[in-house]
Image (tube, rainbow, N blue to C red):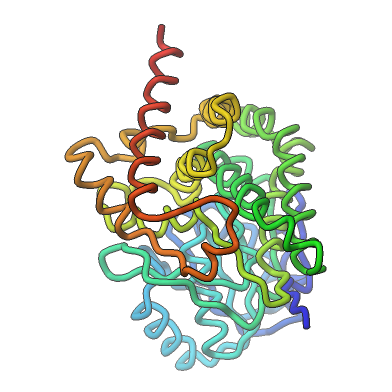
Length: 367
């Protein structure tokens, strides 16, 4: 049995928010809009104007912070009190994850309006949960993806380029994390579909990522940028949305999870940490040094972190590396599916080597 969780509609178009009410009105007439302060400022004018034009009533809640269990419970309670029939999330991954979880709790349709393209959260049927201190607390699998995704490329192109780079880092990891499962995928159509989708995303990013970041620096929603947005939101989201019962050992993402035990890293973006985790994965796989160097060079071209220092970990490196490695957690069943060995001791050594290689690459650039 194969489960495919996708939005009913995904629209990637410049200024789509100006006509968003037309699509949202098909899902509900009384909305609760939840978003970050900056996100609501950036997207609110077009969104609220369009809601007004079609007679959709709405109330707005500003949210700052992490997607925690307590935040989900609190917003679920408020949503029930307001008696709304649709929830709209505006902002980055943590707000969108929160809104998706609230929508599932209240059994309401969800619309996501990403204002940055740093993850596939606008599409995915998953909410990442943190504890009150910002540490990863688990993934909440949802029954459905959002009903509608409105990716306004004009707004996304005006966001700081750092977010786009982080989204690229998060997306390229999808391919490298699924690639070790190619052999077993020969007998699993859902896994084969995920593999080919991740491969397409990687091909698009290899061709367009660097150009797209340059376009964003000039605030231009070009074709290259639009295709990169599709890769980050739609294709990466689709990779995780097709499930026939298989699970993969996502090494780079597991390193992200364990790294959140270190408070200094909380200022880094999800995709930035995952990108560095990909260097660690390459080392664990025993990939040729040339491939590792090429990955580091690619990450450097996007200004993505290649050292622990760039991720905010500058003091007590030995201790912090040990904490991250000891917190690394993938079940034995999943590890058995990998064609390379992974354990806390090897992760610790790979973290040290990745940091050394990253610092060496930065030194070479400065000379």
